Length: 487
Image (cartoon, rainbow, N blue to C red; front, side):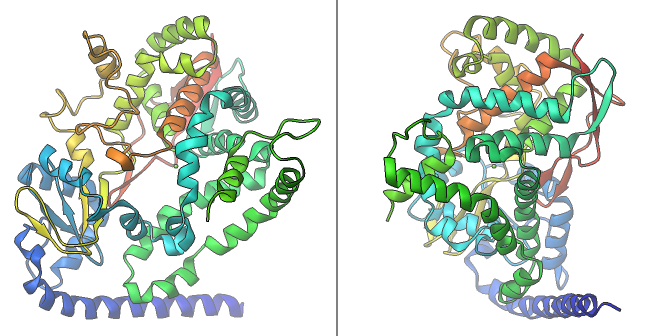
């Protein structure tokens, strides 16, 4: 018998017992402290009244968090309510007045600190990534500024990736949609990040798996009592092995870039200095003391609504015929922007947004007070499906937003990259996702290539159901999409 297997089983069993004992201790403490908590004034939703009801409610939330949030939203629309997470309360806020309060309270409601809690970044991403996040400056400046300049290499990589993974043939071929799209988008994005290393199969597998592991490990760490997380992270963690594996690929590139920069500065002889994320990060570091499943959801939705393909093709042929494959052309794809925005509205990556951690006691404009340490969020799935915000909100209407832009004075409004109080897929205010401009252009380029190169369909014509865990939506992992050369 393999001794290491026995050790692994014993370690897992020990951790399980410790977690259960930890929950029991926490429940006793919670029953005492909740009687004296300021949050007691905020109504709870989805919590049974019997002993250990908090943890039953938190387990139900893991199983069906989206439905619980939507029901709570309908009951308390415009008012705060709270639901049980494994180790703490989550306070939900809705309505424009309370959402504005969140947007305008950076000194008391922290986006960064909430990310540390939700993604357990100390164990899944690394302490320094949020405590010294100089890469955010790169995304907001050099990355966004260079999107147009990167179009030729992005287009080149899109064509090469699809030729490798979905060769355009006369007969129908069926591909596993999730794995194919994840590999494709990972490769295309990494062309901008790390150059031709993006084509290395081992690097593609590594970066794809790392992204998936961050979400899954964060989920398990969040249901583990805080004092046991270091142990759980050691048993189930992936950060250090993933970092070591990535550096095997990246170290030679970094060493070469640094040596060339030190010797020649920005003007390399014989060849241009690469214009990619590595160079931008090195530039920022010298001066310094996400996206992947979106295209999969769009493909599922488009393949289930084939009547949308022809209008999108006609728009593409007209715009690209006049502008070429440029950023200016992507900006003029009004119908495609509407399709992608409506797809994100109806099939979002999560049920909550604008997540914040209260860093000092805070009072909202309606008089509600929350103490430091409280986790807040907006139930954006419910907001996006509210008839107050959208007519026929439960219906997928692909050109909903392009029709809005046909109205006088609305031509430049209702774009997917523009957050509003009714549309918060990318956040809101100064903490809106800084990478949304690249993500939007990348999605448009990829979907454009699919539409112009292939005919495609789902085997039974029905959009595969999405899978939800707590507030996170996971694209269907087993569905296949069929492709052939466009006729």
